[in-house]
Length: 199
Image (tube, rainbow, N blue to C red; front, top):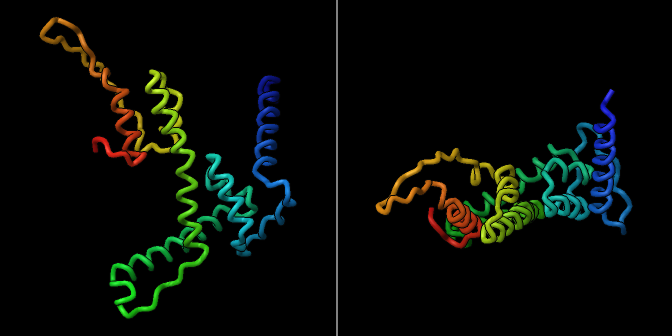
């Protein structure tokens, strides 16, 4: 039996989830159809596309977006793979000379457009976090936003163990190697924003 504090916390979290689901479902539309039965392919429709992107723009995961759009995560993954295949075919056609190659242009369907929209939409919450890191770093408080970036983009913002190397300069002043940490964060944020910076 859960502790009463745990039960209260669970009830509070369930209420927040219900509130988020209500905000993510447009009020002008009735809830979507029941999830597809096992083995049945989900249909890629404008409404499904908008539901997926609405979750992602708020920082939700692909799995959460699929569930709230009444499709399986596997279906979403398949759509993204098909769209990427379209984009790859277009890139190959373009690399071969495009119209001058004599080959017909590969199709570019809604799935190809969806892949581009998906990537841009997933980047939007991360950009807001980068902006928060930069603004907070400029004020000297960056830890909360940095922890969010580390969890969302570990490859780019992974926590590096800091070794406090204390050195004495010519004047006898002690300095530690962590003094430039804020500058390093700003440089990483600049690279993510596409503003250049050290690589």
